Image: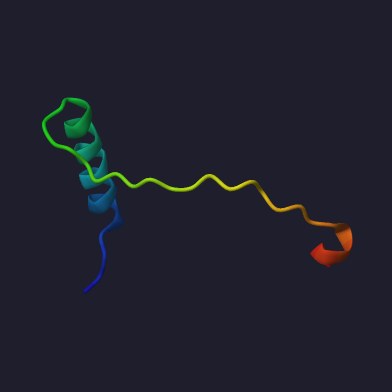
Length: 45
């Protein structure tokens, strides 16, 4: 089955609007904030 990305985007924006209007509650997740790793030039190559 092929995906219809335009319909998926439309559905997502409709869900965001409904959540903003307090019609529905979207699922939320908590994530741990980690600092960005330091990368040296030697490691990047």
